[in-house]
Image 1: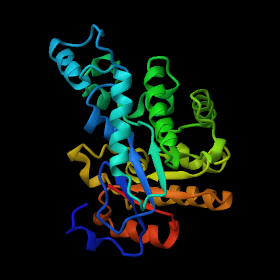
Image 2: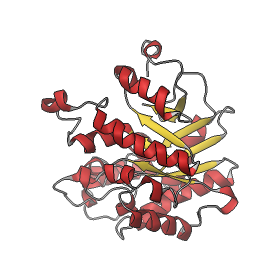
Image 3: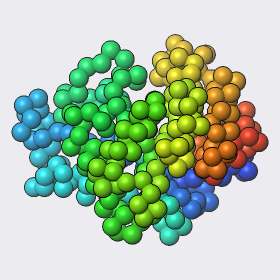
Length: 295
């Protein structure tokens, strides 16, 4: 967010810091870390790739070897992300919320070694989030994401795990089990696990999903796209993409009510918040969230 944009955001909103894009607002006590964006910006390769992978082109293989600089993929991936995250942590940050990778196969495909991803007809609604973490193909990569979190814990950072694309109650049970298998059982040493509401089903099931999780985050952009059935990246549909739509706020109110009744934290992930004054008003008057993470 630029300095010019800041005055257009209501001062009542508590804006949390985000990594890789650190907010220039008053430092917040928490930090939201997007592993998806850090992988794209700092790692550059698919976390499930191997230098022996036959799908790599000669250029990709040479690029990967140069990035690894003698390290294994596992060593480089964990060290790079841990270092990058620690660079963004300040003394103000008491809680570091690390969101596991939630990007789709098309976005993974842009990384070095991305050809290992199957081609999906509709990647945005395909294998991502919990369905990816539970898959055999991504098992080793999921273990690496968990190693990043465990390493940060070992370094004394207060980490909370954020799980993207929880679509059903079965997803909730699955991810809690998968995390426990990786040595990250919810509740151990106070470990909290939150889920992201990306799709309408995650909103409608919020009261029951919160029995599995310690809080919820609404990704307003994803929820807008899936609720309205509009791809934000499609310029021909710009006139239909409206995060201020009542359809989205009605779903958000379901989540807000569930979180308040469960007495669990509710947070928001927003994009270009300065462009949506009605949404700002809704967040200040209705949501009463701990933080709004504005990208």
